[in-house]
Image (spheres, rainbow, N blue to C red):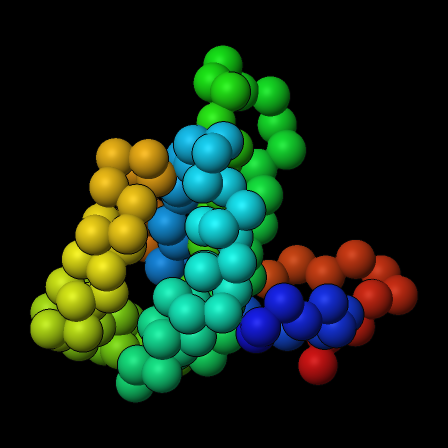
Amino acid sequence: MRGSTTKEYKVLTREQVLYTVRATVAPEIEADWVEWMQTRHIPDVLKEPGFLRAWLLRVTSPTREEWAEFVMVYQLENQAALDAYMASPARARLIQEVADRYGDRAPSTRLFLQAVATIEAEGHPGE
């Protein structure tokens, strides 16, 4: 990942799942948080079994807070890989690293998603 700007289209299969983390980041740590996510945290998560790729996205819809919002989307091979990660010591360690570094200046929530269908626009084929 490391700040890649390569345009790439990947299809989400029905077996694969998405693990999302939404973080609200205080203005005074935003630049450091983004850099650390790109160069340390997300690459460390992607080393775990079953992880395929990740996206770091900035929320652009209006919010009531002055803090920036980001969503990290991790694509995994299947539900079993996500279940194994959720029960792993690595997950606890990775979450603790974020808490130790940023405390309450970057609270987050998690959401788990499974594909029901992929519908493509005409003229934009998948892989």
